[in-house]
Amino acid sequence: MTARKATDLTNYFSAAKQSQQLSEAEEELQRLRAEIEELRSSGAAELEEQLATLRKQLQSQSGILSISVEQIEPNPEQPRQTFLPESIESMSRSLAEDGQLQPIILIQRENLVLFDGERRWRSAKALGWQNLQAVIIPEPASLHRKALLTSLHREDLNPLDKAEAIVRELANNTDLEQVDIPRILSTVVRRLNAQKKMNSVVELMTAENAEQQLGLAALGLSDSEQAVLGLLLDLQLNPASIDANVFPMLSLASDLKVAIRSGLKGVHAMALQKLSPKNLGVSEEEAQSIRVTTTQKVMTEKLSASATRKLVSEVIASQVQSSSTSEAKIKPVSQSCRRLQKLSLESLKKAERNQLIEFQEVLRQKLAEIEEVLKQK
Image 1 (spheres, rainbow, N blue to C red):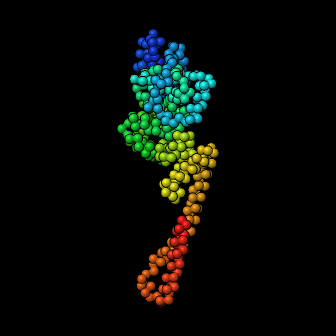
Image 2: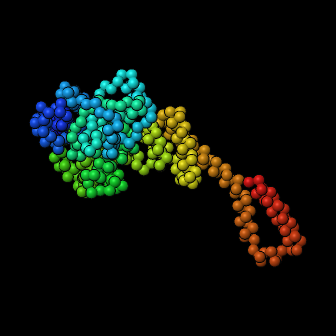
């Protein structure tokens, strides 16, 4: 299998028209712009290394500018939608103590849009800084894809942001609806696993694009399945892993999605998802209340994944036992009610007068007792 050639982001970012300070290199930079469309995805280590090389190169060309933080806008196609307060506070401390160690990267539109460095920008604003060091590049032909590649393999990108970004990228490059993509992937992964062909798909991750397409074409896929698998491989993502660990985040309960954006791990969220109305034997509203309380306990006590699964099992068992106890208490009343309903008019007519009088007195006493109990509830 042919190894994939590493993407040379240095050449791409060198194509940026920086400022008058870079005017003497303009002719060379214009030539390099033609290489933009040749970019291919690469792993996190390669991206970080090439971003570092870019910064050094631009710095050596006097391409670092001082930009007002008020001129900078966040990238609307930023895959990362979650910036935890503690993460911003940590970066703020770093900026305050050590200053800005790396320039942010901006895209020139009508305004300056962030490509890399949103956490530093948010932290600088929180500190009340007026300016940040930055380099400016032309807008990539496919902004969301380039932004996705800079974030995709970073460990601190939460799985919900990752799932939403991947689905958006696939939908942008196919005729598929976002809602259909997880289902298509799940279907094809299950089928290929049953056919013992999934390993051959994973092996295509490091192949050239042409080899990937030939390999997928040999699997008898539908057009939509081939499009989804092809794009995931092009992003160097394992389709089976995305199906099992990432796309399930999209079907989480809304309260768990909020919790993930507040720092809950994906594996914990999947465990807590089992606190459903069906498993608990309660209404959706009651299940959500139980889930929120349990989630807060998990996050406050920083429980491990295994401890969270154990807690969920205990909550379900406790709720089922409580429901059984309540049902046991109610059962005698329900049985008595059913027996009274079965007492027909014909049966009453056949009874002796003294029996009816005795029965009537018992009913009056029980009605009085019921009224007393109802007053207390």
